[in-house]
Length: 445
Image (cartoon, rainbow, N blue to C red; front, side, top):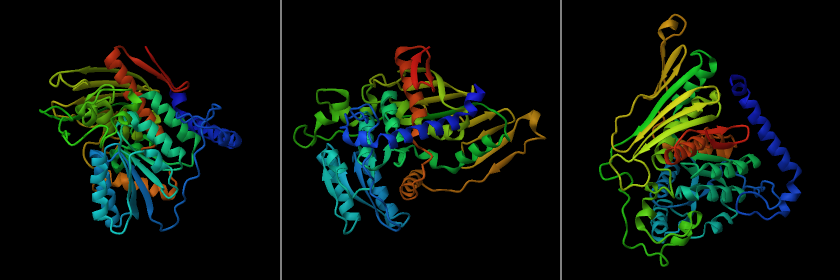
């Protein structure tokens, strides 16, 4: 197990290079193939992305937003503020949503705050992706749309900021990963902004240096207390009229036809068909930066999970979840989520020679008693990056310019989705679930 884990980086590089070689050798075939909507060409080869629009030195990045509701609307305002503060040179030039009211509200914000910038609005996201002047697309649609929106954007030659969770399920994640690996010139960042906090990179350095010994197990949680029911705070608007100002059929397309339900439309995280609830919406925030720090532990290979309906029995998804995850090298991770009790436990990576505490802004190392003379207790001071979500946005924009891969990239996103998917299956179907990194397939233990 340890040997396989130690070779993981080399194996990933070989996979990456092999995919790139396949792409180079089959370019003529792929250009002649029509894509099927899965990210594969009809001949069975990963489709080749259209050439992206290069960004010249000092040029304004032009971006679009697909999904302009709660999260997407927040992103619109935040990117505009980043531009005004001169943290980056970026303009939003296109907005898309199946809800005309949402897109109109986002456009009003853009028109007011982006003086002199023309912003077009769309219902059909394909028309956004057909434009040849857009560098990047932020996708903030519901998670059942994430994979297809991201795949289509990448194949259209647009870099992607994809809101969390990366996808709804593991098959979707694998489809997306195949497209990203097959098109290594493209950038995809998952919207798990905690990965932008410097303390996790410092923890990664400590672990990879060997100073703290082997990382044995870790603990994280994301808990909050919402007496009215989690996600019920998203309000219902009587002005929504399917077939008039809202394309409900398109919203439902990946999950199949469904009678109009305003609660499902705006509170979709509560519904099993559209979301994995706490696991995908909340726990991915905490797991992703830990996966970054624990990169040497390899892929998650076994997940056991329990879900309960303790208070919010109306919600289809669970209001209390507990996960136990095992990685390739044997590392165990305990993860808890709750929407009826906000007391979290401390974020800790427990290693043989010392423990790494990550609850605050800084990375704190405290030695284990038998190693007090060998390991020095210390606090690694980490800079205050301010709003970590803004820092995450800036990181994405800088990656668009530099072509460097972000920390919250497709590999981290896929590893997290392995846990999300296997945990969800365990909670609904029972038992433990395993993942084989060699075959990239899951099965019940």
